Length: 338
Image (tube, rainbow, N blue to C red; front, side, top):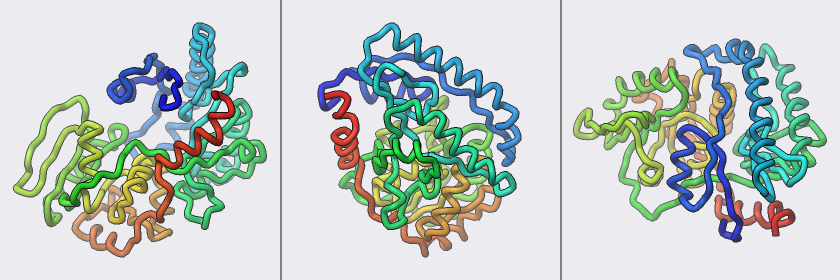
């Protein structure tokens, strides 16, 4: 948009309303998301495998929707945010993903190798694969760890390491909030973590803010003089709270990880969503790197865990989003759009 291009955004559910507020001058199209085979237990994989036929059909439907959409409009390029069926043979197409391979449980480790072949099959259909992570060759300090490393030639040829891409901005505000707890993710695990946190959060010293991630509700209440619970925070409110926070407790979703790296936060605890192998791997990886302390929600004991987290260093210094976006446009998009 800064370069004068007209942008159409196709998305669904919560992202549709959020992005509409962020970019009121863009055209918007409601575009269905994949079905999410989440489980109420930590054993996500069996349910995921059982839902593969559903996901395959969803992918085929997505490709048909894309072809229909592109046939009715004259677009110059397609940028797919991790949507495998959103591409065109006729115009430049770019795929965004930090997962060039997938992390799987140790007992089916060969599937991790197989995932690289599957990714390569889809990556062939795109002009570039944009990886929102620093290169794994840069001092070994790669934010996405092994996930952005592939053993496949075509994937590596198309991969462009863009660095972190975050929507948050560093603000010149005082860090006057002792603890920010962000509860997010799919149900029922979101509610399970909420119940665990609410029982323990008042034990922490200082001022605490708990965001429940429940946009369908609208309430704010105080558990005590120092502990506030909000059902939901707007993106602007959340960014301000993250800037104010001395210590962040959250899931280890990759978008949140990029936000924390962008803000340069050094103290926190990551709680992976049970069964989501990406979050479980990232939490373990950051723990081993001594960047951030990780804890299973089933073993969470906040009063003790925050003490254990004190010995960690935070993410290494990385180039920030503004610099990365300029480089991405000039080195990738400009060749196709200018």
